[in-house]
Image 1 (cartoon, rainbow, N blue to C red):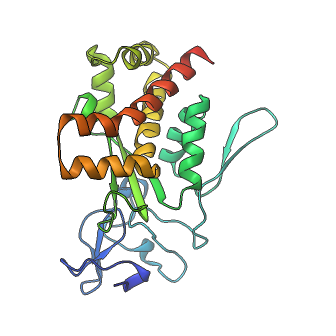
Image 2 (cartoon, rainbow, N blue to C red):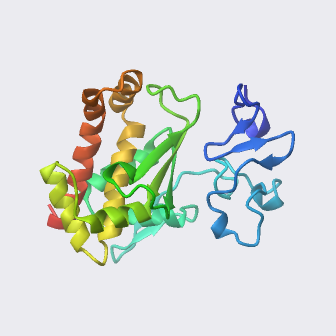
Length: 250
């Protein structure tokens, strides 16, 4: 059932789901703070559309955008610099710029932009998971069953977790990925962003690839190590390729 702002109503909670948070139309408030609240310090993190819902919309419950609702886009100026559309968030530009340093990263970014799933990036300064498993996660709408293309997805990149991981020197058993991660760990200027771009390319594959969504559904049904490795294989290959292409300039 779709009600407030044409959003799907969660039958279990009776709340309107926006992708990043829930809204109570009875109370006229969000039930959690805006993930982008730091960008709008003059506003309460529980307001809707800067208290101006006539002119503004908030399609994902995450950040204020124009009523055009258009997808983010990028182009290049005559000097080869990346130029982003006005509706691109700072996090999207930071992740996107890193991904555009490799051909595979560009392919993954273009997949995300062209996808029917509305994908957004959110860089979170969180460090309680300083491991390979805790670098990122993607969150989709409740109706997502693991196979059907989700309507929306937010990819959370844990910046502090990645910093801790790159400084740890313990990069896992995959030799090729290990080498790419080592290069990023030694690059004090752009290594952090480059690794975040590779992580984003990994997570995008989980969201946009139907084959990977089927593998994810199989893993959720039967959480064996083999099923886990099957669903992570291609995303990890993509992550590795992005890092190698970034540093070896294939």
